[in-house]
Length: 257
Image (cartoon, rainbow, N blue to C red; front, side, top):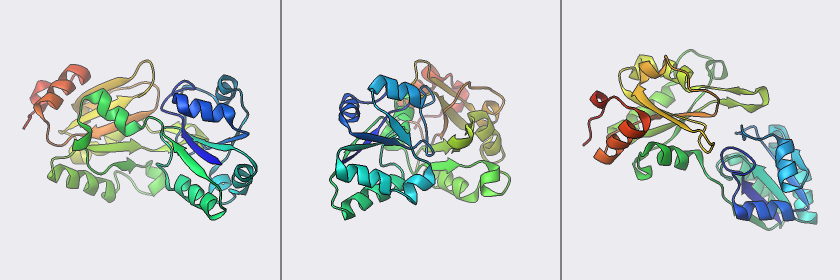
């Protein structure tokens, strides 16, 4: 059996009860933290809390050399851990399909997602979000500013009145996490006068929500990672009230429909 377990958003306690039970009962445990990571817990803290050794695999160790994971699942019960929810990345889907090709049973135990947390913390209704996008570091896409594909996604969502969740680039192996002020600075040229919403440290004891003009957000600091940025579309009056009450949005930026 190969069980995919989402660890949730912040630390060793963010896992669900079902996920914790599966992890503690496993013969072997593997994890990857290149797509995201728990900023509130080390691997050692995870191991201590759940009383199991965890082998962390890099991208090549999951995508190009998955046999140690599959061999362990073929011989007994193996768990594959990821931050947030599992199966969000195509890497994980590919690993599950490889297991099926070898006749290995699989199951999925979900964790809290950044998208659901962003909706819950901001008061923006989850069914009013359109396609999400990721803002990469400028060096990662080889050009200055925001890639055209990201701008086009935001514009297409806004034409439909929908909010856009912007994931900010993570280079976990380098301990490098894009912050919301850096993202807002990049977006200022296109959307500087528009409303933006920062979500920082979702799932932690001290999450932060801040709503303001995007060019104003570029001048602020939001503390430790991880950060997300939401660019709202049309606002329901309850969403507008929530952004003002929970995120400090200036009333002049709120025009509910």
